[in-house]
Image (tube, rainbow, N blue to C red; front, side):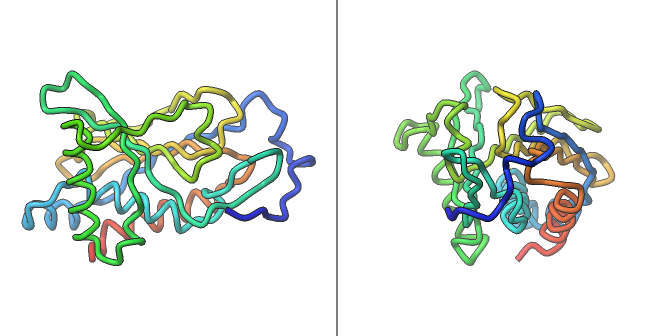
Length: 208
């Protein structure tokens, strides 16, 4: 991470009870859905990759407050809950972004193997207290594949949480999928949110 020139002291949102905002937008995922099914790939993993790359492309989403200073990470990993087939146990994993692999299929293989290893106890799950995560180069990604929702409001541990929280739902009959993002208004404004959704749609349209 690097320290950036950003006036925290005079930011209008720095001292309010909560600087968090939420937005939910429907994305057309038909191309990726069909590609995933035709190539025996996990649509969940492919969606995670598309959303991770979109988030990492927006510098403001990578900004945090560490030690009282504004910093910007070069990239963000994903923290994502996973669940065993019996749907009784949740664990969290930390996943590197696809851009570090230069090949989405190799990245898919890496994530698939890591999920299996964590569920089987070969790899340790991610285990960092929620209040300490803002100082890490991570963002939270969570899928609710059973519900086609229109909007989603994310709960946060404290009002001054900075890291983005991304949640996506079930694909409907029109191949539309809602993607919700919770972000801090200290660093992120409407333009940056719109850029995130623009990049996300591009990633779902252009698979490789």
